[in-house]
Length: 74
Image (cartoon, rainbow, N blue to C red; front, side, top):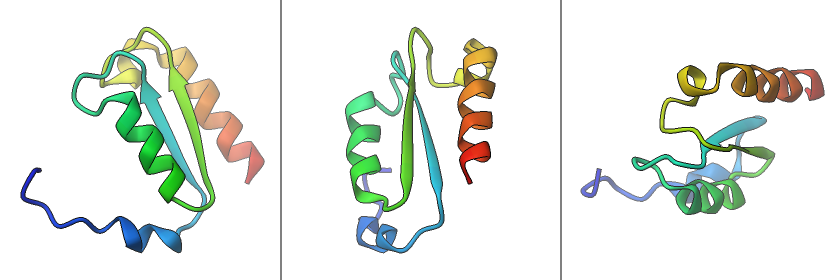
């Protein structure tokens, strides 16, 4: 991942995007996701508390609530 080219400038023209962050994610830390959310136009950021990287398994109810809310707003 460290050797990847930075393509964040291409995020300026994106469809509605949902970013679901897990507060205890050790792979993609919340600060990284928050920074990414500021770069993606038309994005919606949700943080699921007390969850690890696979929040759909750790906190499925909270994950579904976030996803449904996002889709209903489209």
